Image (spheres, rainbow, N blue to C red):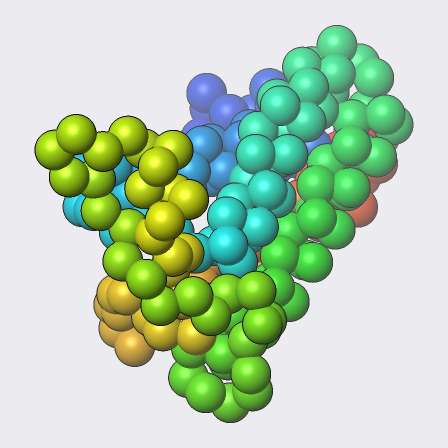
Length: 179
């Protein structure tokens, strides 16, 4: 049985560097996709959706810093940082499952996410005025589903994957550093 080997171009990178780079790219892609659905697709995020984005916003600069530190032979601190990012994504998995469960009516969502007003900007109406008079998007109603999962469900899946990649980087860095 042969061992799995990396392509030649990636062999100079440690597991920590690769994991940090993957978490960075994954978080950027997730946020860009969410913004695309919001601004191009017209899907207004609810307050829980916005909370789920915090882990991605946190991960982007920290994963980039972890990558740069790992390339500059500061693996210990880089591993700590990417480990913290992994924990943030793990917490985000819980938030995503909670949010998706509220959408499926398995349990109630937060009371602060129940406004029913429509948010629209008509002619002569400012965005701030619309925010004051209109309601927020409901957290307990999925506005979109793909393969049975809503935005919240997909955020939980992506967060779990990114948490796993971060854990591999944080826990596996010593094995690579010893080679």
